Amino acid sequence: MAQVSKRYLHKDVEERILDLFWMSLAMLSTKEKISMFLDDLLSPTEKLMLSKRLAIAFMLIKGHDYPLINNKLKVSNQTIWNVKTNLTHRGKGYKMAVEQIMSKEKWEKFWQDLDHFLTQALPPKYGTNWTEVRRKQWEERRKQNKPF
Image 1 (cartoon, rainbow, N blue to C red):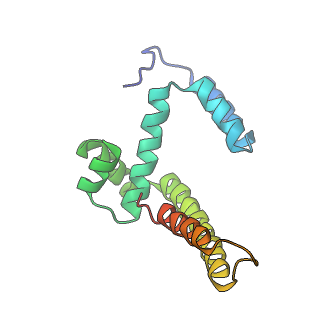
Image 2: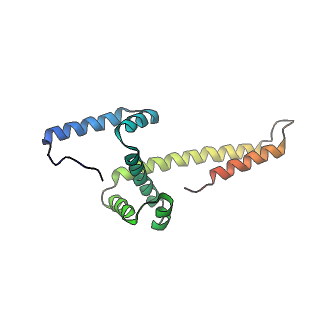
């Protein structure tokens, strides 16, 4: 569990350092920059803990039950309950992040479906080994259909 000093900060100082933290995150525009920043800021355990919480929220919103989440993410029922409670009573940030992820997933699925349709509809160029083409298509389809 994270520890914070028992000595309280003045309210103005606390607001200023939180503002600095939020601004630092907001200014990072790419996944790579955010990753570098969080690698310096958080321990590997803290990053994993935060990632698991977001994954729990994602899975709960998608309708997965406790045993599946517990088994897939190796988290306790208490942790799942805490995230679920957060989603129910506050959770605007969780919901916003998960909705953006789900929206991105829908677009990726659309482009994958379009690509799949085109590869099925259009024959390979002359002289292509059809067996090899179909094998690659089958492998791609298997990769895409793996569950969370």
